[in-house]
Structures are given as C-alpha cells and as structure tokens.
Amino acid sequence: MEPLTDSWGREIRSLRVSVTDKCNFRCKYCMPAEGLEWLPRDEILSFEEIQRLVAVLASMGVDEVRLTGGEPLVRRELPVLVELLATTDGVRDLSLTTNGVMLDRFAAPLVDAGLTRLNVSLDSLSHVRFAEITRRDALDRVLAGLAEAER
Image (cartoon, rainbow, N blue to C red; front, side, top):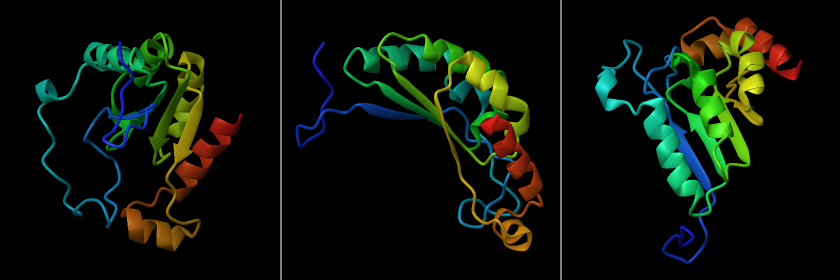
C-alpha cells in the first residue's frame, strides 16, 4: 500500500484518535459549565472499528497513535482498546492524552495493556487556579495519578 502523504508530499506517521466526546472536567476554555449534549453511543466508534482504522493506516506508514477525547479515561474498558492497538502490526508508539484525574486507577492497567507514553494536560499547580480553570477541585487526584503513572 502507498504511504499516506499530505498535500506537501510529507509522509503522515502519526494519528490522533478521539475515543469519546465525554469529559469529567468543565474547563473554561473548552466546555460550558453546564456541559454539552453527548453523542449517542452508536455514533462513537467501537473498539473494533478503531482497531480496523488504525490497522489500515498503519499499513500506510502511520506508526504513532495517540488516544484522546474528551477525556479518554472515561471510556469504558479503555485498557482493552489499548491492548488491541498495541498488538496491531506497524504501531510502534501508543500514547494517551488525559487530564489525569482517573490516572491513579488506570496507569498500571494501561501500561500492562501496552501503552508506551502518556501526556497529562495540567493547567496549574495552584489548587485555586486549577479549580477556577477546570471547575473541579481535583488537583490532588491528578497529582496522585501522576505519582501512580511514574511507579
């Protein structure tokens, strides 16, 4: 299969996949305080559909996959998807972008499933500023998640 290229002829080697539109924060720059109307479940790609898409793109040279959202950790059974993608031929780098609030529970299962990198979006280390931005008092949970991810 031909390599995937952009309009400038550059090879496309990375892919971002949003696994959900849902989020457990209400960041001022991202979402209204009252939230949004979420997509119906049947409009969200299944794990099998995501894996098939990644496999096709991997056969065209994409070897870096980043899972995003919303907040990807709110997607049920996310380690199952990570394992599917980690074992997909051609995928050499599998990462996740998260707000980190649920990371204390998911860091070990995600690494065990094959996650190779992690990016935590952290707006502030000040409890007051963090709560102002995210509309959640969750900085301590994010820091606990970072500690667990380091372990």
